[in-house]
Every structure is written in structure tokens, then in C-alpha cells.
Image 1: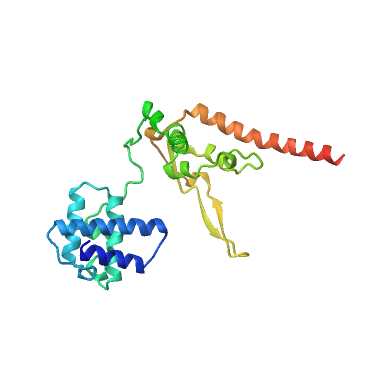
Image 2: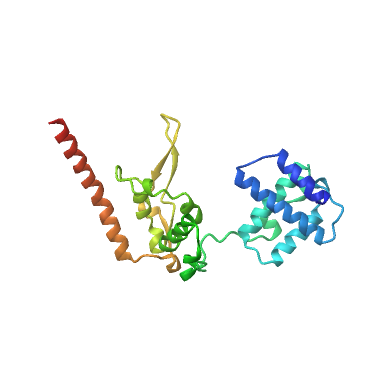
Length: 245
């Protein structure tokens, strides 16, 4: 292990800022930066040797690799953390626009999904295979599938269960919605509570590449979602009435 990689690893161990995932991402990015700086000819570096020319070399290589704007911003954030910890925060501008980094593309027209087909049967672990099936059938993200709990998702004791929330998500029909609500502070309790905004203030974008169900099927799910809580309420009243008598 060279001096730069060693000193960066020690720096990360002594400054555990952020979540465990953030710390792990930071260590991977700085280790990658150390290896790429060594390949660029900077062989006698330590963590305290960071200069503007090193940032320019790394940024130029990452842009040449065709990395997305989001990835570039994440890596530059880790470089800023490095510069701040060694007392050289001034070598990097605070605004990414000064480095010619474009804005993130929150909605793309590219479909990056992959159909596993027969390869799904080759997955030996049943939990991993079930997670992949959830991604394939319902379009869930990897983290959602890993944390998925069937017993909790199938709860029928209240309307606002995870199952009901998923069924109301318009993203299944390819509609991305913003500004549907926001948090406001309750003056009496000083707590932040969610408040829905009027429908005329919503911002929606339709992208057929994100659609996984038809409008007809989505409306049928909404109708069933409205009826089931009423049936559960009637069943609860019936059970308690019979128990009391």
C-alpha cells in the first residue's frame, strides 16, 4: 500500500462523518482517486499533498470516462471532504458549475432495465431470487426488495399500510409527480407534519418507459384499495359486537 492510500485510509478512520454507507462510498472513491493519481505520475503523495492540479487531473479523467453528472458530483463531494480535512478547502470551488459539471438528470428517457429470462433460475439463493423477481414484476428498487417484508406488506389492519401506499403510486403508470405536498411546522407542537398541496400545484411528467401497468389496471387497484378498508371495518365491528354480546 502506497503512502497516499494509507494516509487517506487513516484520514477516513479518524473522521467518521455521515452514515456507514457514506463512509464506505467515500473510502472507495478516495482509494480510486489514489490509484488513478499514481497512474497519472503522482507517486510521492500523501493526503496533505492535495493540490488543484490533482483535482483537475482526476476530474478530466472522470469526464473522459463518460461518467454521469450525478456520479461526478458525488466524487467531487468526497474530494471536497478530503480537501477540508487537510486544511486545503480553498483549492476547489464550492459551485460545481465553475467546474463545468451539468445538472443532474432526474428523469431520463433511457430504459436501463434488464430482463433476466431463464437466468433467474440459475440464482441458487431463494431470497436473492425472490428479490430479483420483485424487481422484475413490480419495478421495485434493489433496496426496497432487500427490505421487503411480506408479512408487514400484507397487513390489513389499516389503510395506510405499505401495500396501500404502493398501490397509490402513479409511477406504475409512468407518471412522475413533484410538489404534491410538503412538511410544515405545527405552531402548537413545533413538529413537522406533512401537508398535501392543491392538485393544481402538482407538477407531473409522463414517461412511457417507466410504465409497468395499464391505466385500467391501475384504476381497478385504486377501487379495490378504497373498498377493502371498509370491509375490514365492518368485519372489526361485527367481531366486537358478537364478542360483547
